[in-house]
Image (cartoon, rainbow, N blue to C red; front, side, top):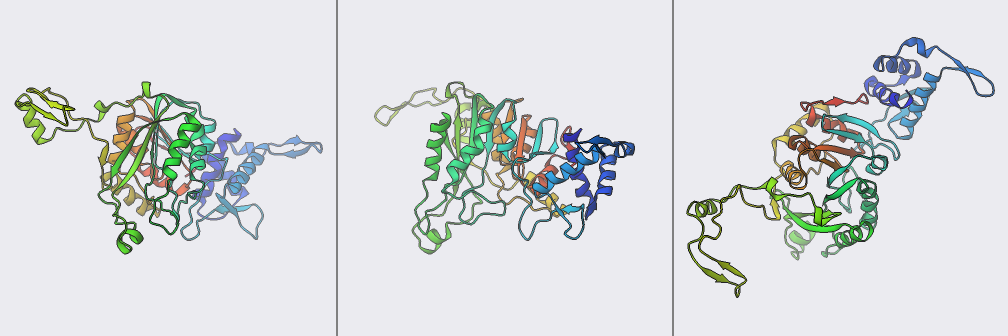
Length: 404
């Protein structure tokens, strides 16, 4: 009973839209949890003094203190036992505290957790077939959601990944979208934190690097401004890397047949005429073309490891519109929906489970939903979880947890 009441206590403060005293809190919990009011009057002797106490009210007050410790509620300064939902100051966001995890919403295929991946996955015991995520970049000027500094970034990523990796199945994949554009202080030279991270993941966890996938971003703004536009010593950036690892390359679950692309017009014509009609020899015999080469009919062409995806999508437009309508902040660094769906389908099969440990706008979870993959997503910022829920309103089995 005690643990199951926490969402109802949180829901009471969310719906109160103002300060809530304990009597109104008890009544709200009774209504949402469908408890008889008589239970709130029963008392039993407790402790050495055998003082009569209502255990149900005491459990609710414990949850009240848990929410206080998580910075979810704040006490009205001049009144005892009166609390209200904490509000962000300026651009600050409400983050759940370390050690606390609460269900935000769920569907038939997945669950969204308000909490740190480190805390949640420490006690998680379901198989995970892929970890696909975009951690906060180690920016010198953090965005609203914050990030670890570059000097601590490698250890921080390893710390976050460690409990999740214990559930990764043999041959499972890890895909990390991180930034290549982190520079040394006051210098046009790039940081080598990425290289150090790759080596750390190999040394600490025995992971094998499968590829450095290149996400070409046609909508990426010009930059770095200081070094490309002002000092003129750098080129404008156009891509971000996605580092793909596995714990067993001999049994890796990826399959390029799940992400075949249409043949080009020229290749379609080549197939139509039965392949090459010429003989040719290139690169001192390294490449040979014979009559009939490239003439076998296939379902499509295998994608190259340079992936061109734009941020523009109906899914992201709908997400931003829903956030605007509810007065919620939209996440400022969303992965393109088409890229998320490509990674999900390439690295996993239907029925597999994907973990996104830095969910942000819940793009990856939505891609899993459409691709019929199970998913589990964690995110510490309450506003992002509530905004992300709007992506799933029409998903089978959608259920918004009582916390809202």
